[in-house]
Length: 389
Ligand SMILES: *Cc1c(COP(=O)(O)O)cnc(C)c1O
Picture 1 (tube, rainbow, N blue to C red):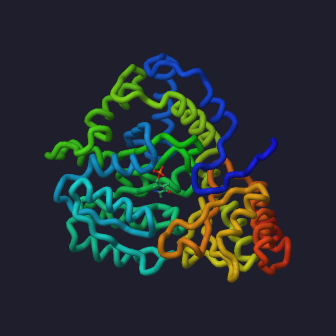
Picture 2: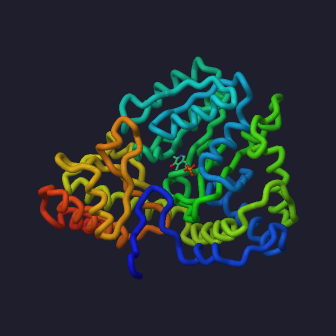
Picture 3: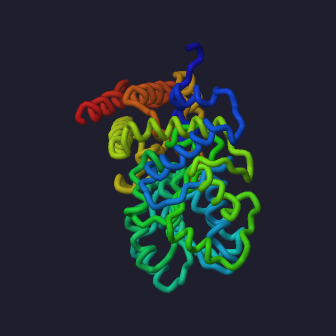
């Protein structure tokens, strides 16, 4: 294909031909029998992808930020206390959203950019806090830091706090077991590891989150995000009955159902393992090329993306050369280090050859930027890692 570029940013990602074909199907009524079937099936499949058999899925037209908004709007009542485990840009955003609905927000902050707050510090905050909920950004896309969701969620349970996970850059890539780990609400968006073009907010609420919603005294402060309206709609579609509140994004839902089917065909365990393997190979290449990474240690690093620092003497103008070589990667996002690093997403349908193509394009970019290194060093490290497993 002429002018074909490989899109290796942390969302939107590359999509499968089957998903893109579903986007192009004739748009039917939102109450047509074939659409009701697809929507119902997508809801059932979401429970499996989130590994939350007892969860209630919600699918609404919007981006990941709407999913965050929906969580806050339905769980927070004015005056509630919320703890935000903050590992970057999207932790700040969650705090802002919670405040908008009247929560008093406390941050458990990482000691430095690229780090995560220690479990002991989060526990100390939870102990005295009487928090109604805590939020965790599973993978903060601004730092590539992966939070210890399992450990943090266990603390949330221990201190009787609702556990809300922003999984926008993790669900269906990074290992996340919503029910087993005790996560009360997890959310994502279509365009990241779920593998569907942008436009769907996806939320799975567990029983404790739904109880908290049913027990609230104050009305929900958002008209569009209100579960009072959306819950009966989701229940109806899953029972294969027509329903309406706001018109569903018909074509995106077809695409979602196709992509969830592909994800489940691969299997969640195989999918987590593939993301780990490809991430390890890419990170080995980054190290072999003499670049550091934003996360302070390997155990705090995501498998859905990598955030390398530019080497000395190289700046973001290098990214244009990477693009000349056919691969699009993303610039920095975290305000404190924005100009010093870049981001490469490797989630969804990403393959070993995509990883090698990306490393090759980055080597081209580094060479164009005048950086001295042994050509092929990154490719060799990535290939060695791939061949080891
Ligand atoms: C992308 C992202 C968001 C925001 O999603 P939008 O679809 O851009 O609104 C929120 N949180 C995380 C962790 C993300 O990666």
